[in-house]
Structures are given as C-alpha cells and as structure tokens.
Image 1 (spheres, rainbow over the protein chains, first blue to last red):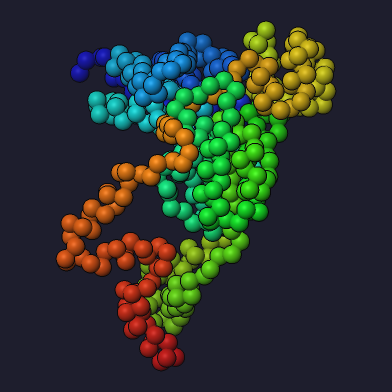
Image 2 (cartoon, chains in turn green, brown):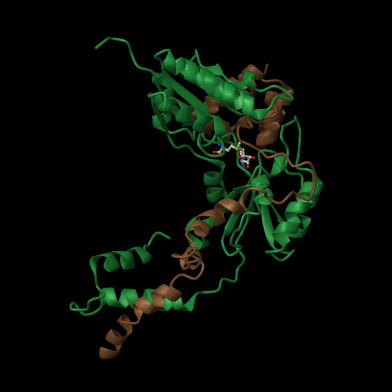
Length: 290
Length: 127
Ligand SMILES: C[S@@+](CC[C@H](N)C(=O)[O-])C[C@H]1O[C@@H](n2cnc3c(N)ncnc32)[C@H](O)[C@@H]1O
C-alpha cells in the first residue's frame, strides 16, 4: 500500500442564524479538514468560518452577473472536486441545511462518489426548521408539503390544501438570475395567488417568513390574507407558509378499518388479526409525541 | 469597517457571556466594539435585514435552480405527464388495477381492502 492519502468530501451546513445553528459535528469537520470551501450569505458568517479555518476559500467568485447558473454550480463542484482529487480531506460549507435547495452540494457528492471517493453530507438547520420553531408549526399534525415556488407553478404540483404548504424562493419567482435588492414581481405573485385561490378562500391567512440571521435578532413574520399577497414585498430570503384549510374530511372507511385493526390487535389473545405487525402499527398510531 | 462589525457579531454569537452582556447593555457593548454610528444603529434595531445591510451585503447565496418564466401565465409542463403515464401504459392489459392502486393514499382501503377486510368482520360478529 502506498502512503498516499485518499481524498474525501464532507458537506456541512451553517444553519440560518450565525454560529449557534451549526452542529458540533459540522464544526469539528471544518476545523479538521485540509481544505474548506464555502458559500454563505453574509460577511459575518464568512469571518466566522475563517476564524475556524483561516485558509477557507469562498466560492462566491463562481457567481457572475449574466452567467448561466448551471455553469456557476458546475464550477463550484469542480473546485471542490479538484481538491478531493488532490488527496485532501475537503469540507464544503453551505448555509442552512447543505442539502436543502442547494444544487452544487448534491452535485459534488454525486461526482465524488462516482470517482470512487468517500463523500458524505451532514444535516444542518434549514429555513424550514426555523419556520417550524418560529411559527409553531408541527408538521406531524396535518402533514406538510414543501415546494420551490416556480416549480410549484410550472409543473402544477398537486398538493393537499388540508396540509400545510411551504413555498420556497417566492422572492425569485420565475427569475433566472438574482439581482441586488430584488423582490418578487407583483405580476408573478398574482399568478401564484390565483393558483392558490383555487384551493383556499381569498381570506385564507398566509405568512411571509424570514428567520433571524443573528442571535439577538427577531424573525420577520407577516401574516396577510391570501388576496393581499401580490401587494407584498417578498425578498429572496423569505419563505411563504400557507396553513392548512381547517376542514378536513375523514375517510370513514379508513377510520373503520384502522379501528378494526387496533381492536383486532388489542382484542382476545386468540384473535387472528392480532399479528405482531398489526400490534406494532397500532402502537405507532398512538404515538404520544405528535 | 464592516470587518469590525463582522468580528463583533461573531464574538457575540460565539460567547454566551458576551451575548448576555449585549442583552443587558447593548449600547455599552457597541461602544466598546468601536463600531460606526450607522452600524450601531443597525444592530440596535435587532433586525437581520438592517444588520445585513450594515455589513454591506445583499445576503443572497442563490445556489439552487430557479426556473425562468418569461411572464405570466406560466406555461404548462410539457414533460411531466408522460413519465407518470408511461409505466401503466406499457402494462395496460394485465394490470388495469394499477391506477387505482396509486390513488390509494387519497382513499386508502377502497376496493382491494374492502374485500380483504370482509373476513375480519365476521370475526367481530362472533364476539
Ligand atoms: C437556495 S435556498 C437555500 C435554503 C437553505 N439551504 C436552507 O437549508 O434553508 C434559498 C431559499 O431558502 C429560504 N430561506 C433562506 N434564508 C431564509 C431565511 N432567513 N428565512 C426564511 N427563509 C429563508 C427562502 O425560501 C429562500 O428563497
């Protein structure tokens, strides 16, 4: 065996709020890596990463005005992979959760694995995780659907208005490039609103949400009626939360079936329906944490 | 100058004691950090956007795909329906029951389950 070290890649997230939302595991990986590359949203996070690893390199220069995004992402992944190929233990850092609405992180991992390198991703705190905390949303209550806003419109995603709906990147709805100070165009918000109005009353409340990015800051939470959505100033760092419609119709057949199963599982010891699997699923249905 | 603000923010975020001191007397901590008046004002708002602006960035790492739509209304998807229909179409004659199976999540135990459940009902009657 040669003594040459084989390169590897680990992708980690910073969380949304500065410092406090990065996991200890991610922190250790940044410190331990031979090479660190990062894409973050503000100079304070950059300063912090450089404090952890002075040699860390920003990939921000991969962005250029008018440049096709696909090229930007490919460049990011290329630079990460070059270091892996050079035998380095590489750590790539992205903001939030590194795998949530981040293309170059997934690309880099896929390509590294294809080339035979060890490549892993560690979970991080996403904007959605912050939203659950700040808006008091329990996705276990009525379910939760998450879509990229443009994708939601263009592919006419089917969804259940009886479950919560989270729309990401509403601030860049239909935009191929991002400009300084941009907000969602009212015309495009109107299209989105019209689609949503097919499923919700116009008085349905929606929340425009922006998680705090610094530990002493408060989140921005603005509740408006759906009909007023087109008038809102929605920044690229905001997420739209649409709560479930209150009326949810129960499927009585499913209910009878489940009750039958549970009774079967809890019933007489000799009951044929009380299989191990049935008993387990009945226990699961009664989970106390929901 | 923004470097001082970045360093201050990281210090406060990293050290719970600094954060507590900041919470107790923000003005004193800001004076100590040697920030400009504009930076102090931004921090005192406790508004991420204002702090970000004082840092001199526009805070966007757009690293996910956004489909470009020329203008409303968005065009209907040309590619999404075929993949859904393809598998059932190939196996149409033997597996006509497939499409209802896919709808199960909406109406879970409809046709197949009713029949299966029939034997369990007599067992209730026995009780
Ligand atoms: C490219 S995605 C990156 C998401 C990030 N990786 C995460 O884990 O949250 C950008 C989108 O994330 C959401 N987002 C980012 N920062 C946010 C914040 N501070 N508050 C609310 N949503 C945010 C917005 O929907 C935004 O358009």
